Length: 305
Picture 1 (cartoon, rainbow, N blue to C red):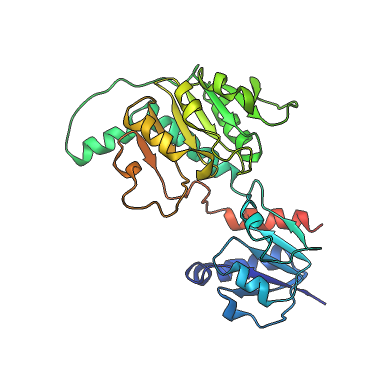
Picture 2: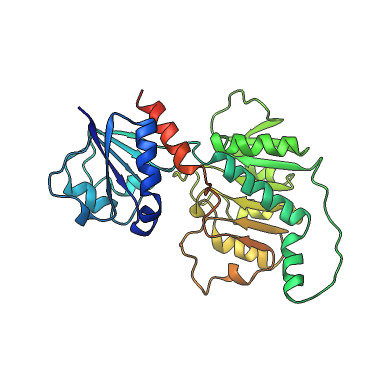
């Protein structure tokens, strides 16, 4: 007898994806009968599902409170930090909770490289010039031989490191716990980050949001950055003190920032980041890829073995 799996997704996305998701269930999870929901109205009180697959949708807590406690709760992303905020609201005792770490590591790493190359080759400025029909040549930076510090060496950080090394960058990994990492030139601890950042051309944030990393990139650390340094954040917005970063960018104390995540999303229209020519801003899309759902089901299949 098949087990029951509930997949939560926003309605407009589910309309496009349901056929693909159904096919992926047949391929990777043939022992599960899929059900889909885009709101609490799509489930009935007391419904039981062996497996719930979800992201942190607005309707996720309401659905979880309405249905019976599942055996297994799987998140479609790598981060589960928001679950801590729901611990008083949801009873998840005894529920197996897993995430999809690595599901989009490759595409995020590619985004990081694109950001680094954008600033090295002034591509953001040339786009502005093109829009204004300005012909102005600029000196470029050759990144081979430059230094990058990657804060966090999980699946994403390691994919970033591989690509940076392939382009000739010297890679320092900043980690909480020292151990052997393949393909990293040197390591430092979070306590050593201010000193290491002062010698880095690029600082890439790939850490989860925890008590230790919240506000990690503050005014003090930014004050140690080279004037030619670029900050890349593909982790969580709260890892960076946005006011301190705004000040550093507005006064050109650092060269620039590649930002995919923010304290508030969507970014408010009056936020100063919108107006800064030394910010490359994207709407939390670094992790998107045409392979996302297949990667997700492959990971989930492995976790259910």
